[in-house]
Length: 130
Image (cartoon, rainbow, N blue to C red):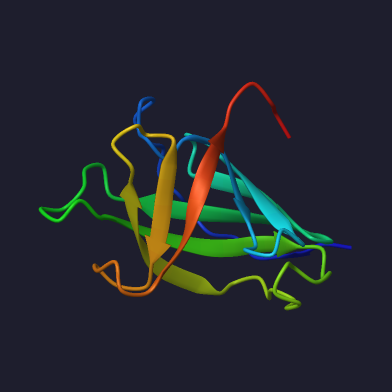
């Protein structure tokens, strides 16, 4: 059973660098998360046993330091544990700052507009859909 909450999102330009499928793997290789980020402002996430959906907003262009501001709100979750062992509650909004590699095939997610506290890399997954 999925818990749900309603949140509005805005569509992105079709060539926004965030659109696509991304994967991040824990350093020890024991778990990975896959994110299907869509141009309509929604995301589908698979993390360990968790399946979640969210809506998000993201800046159209990076700031002067190369960061995109992104706010993500979980709208549905199956109540199972993610890679960190946590269960995510719908309705929680989180703002992070994304910086893309020049290739467009990797990014890091940071808690502020600095590379001091980040997770990643998120690697673009090509040719596969989830």
